[in-house]
Image (cartoon, rainbow, N blue to C red; front, side, top):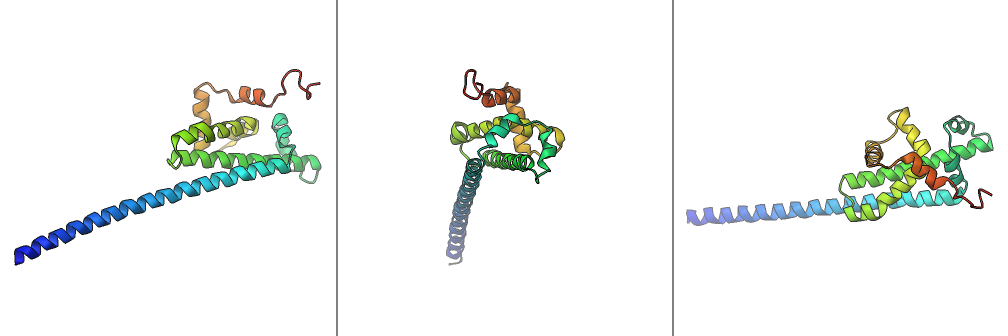
Length: 182
C-alpha cells in the first residue's frame, strides 16, 4: 500500500510539474503578445501624431530643407513668428526621433518581425531620419541626446555606405526644372 501511495504521489508531482510548466509557457507567450501589441500601438500612435502635426504645420517640410545650426538660437525666440515656426519644427523632429526610437527598440527587443520591419518600418525610419538629418545629425555632436538604438542604426547604415547628408540633399532639394526652382 505504501508503494502505491509513493507511485501516486510521484504521478501527482509529475502532473503538477507538467501543468505548471505548461502554464508558465502560456503565460510567457501571453505576456510577449501583450508587449508586441503595446509596441505596435505606441509606434502607430507616434506615427499618427507625426502625420497630424505635419498636416497642422505644412511649413515643416520647408523647414527640413532650410535647417541650419544657427536656427537653434532663433527657436528660443518664440515670441517672434520665425522663432515659433522653428520651435514647431524642432518639436516635430523630437516626435520623429521618438518614432524612430520606438521602432528600433521594438525591433531590438524582437517585438517586431523581421519581414515587417525590413519591408515597412525600417523604410519609414530611414525616410524620417534622412529628411531631418541636419538637425538630428547635430544632436550626435552635442552629447548624449540620441538613444543607443538610433545611434547604432545611423552608424550601421553609414558603415554600409548610406551617406545621410547626400541622401538628405537628394530628398529635400527640388528636382531640376521644378516649379520651386523657377
